Length: 273
Image 1 (cartoon, rainbow, N blue to C red):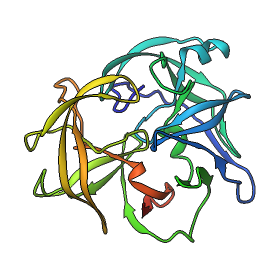
Image 2: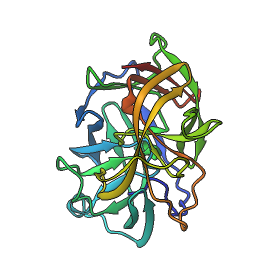
Image 3: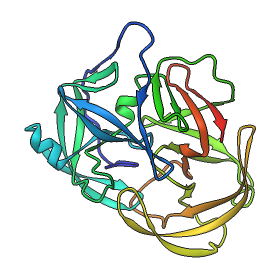
């Protein structure tokens, strides 16, 4: 599955649908304190347990689920991830649904997800999520589609890069100026791709995808808009010369208690835990 894919996207016309009226909140599971697992239906079959991943540009189905749905890959390609290159297949599904919203037809990737925990059968990416406004509440463990004008918090504008949401943050221990980071709902700690200060230690980290050797460093203060997060442990991924990135790193969504994503207005409203 891709965090930043080298795949050239094919052009498909797809339709996003929302039921009339305010859709009810979808119950989700928050696992390990940060992973968002939601019930997703594919081509009318399900629900299946999907990881909600805002840093994944393309939705991914496990090889087992693709086989069950009789989906065959029309070609194989390589996607680059934080943990290295991954072989994936390409296919198209007629419809993907979560709660009262749906998107389709939609091109997807097929990959071996056996290393994912909790019997995850797929990864719901930005190609689905970008079609809607939604609110994630970590304490209530709900994901609600639709606008939320009542949420009080810090408003942060974001830019889009390949469908991924990028914001500016400040960490003066790492850099004098702002850092461009991708909002990542499947990440436990802030992760950066450039060694700007010597790491304090090295550790083998169990990422969502696989075990990876990452360096760690303690950041005294991380500023995100008006929000200040003190004494934050960050990870440094070894730079891959073949992977051309436009961002400085990844920022976990779990740093906030409630997050409203307005794709229609291109901003977030976040409430600190």
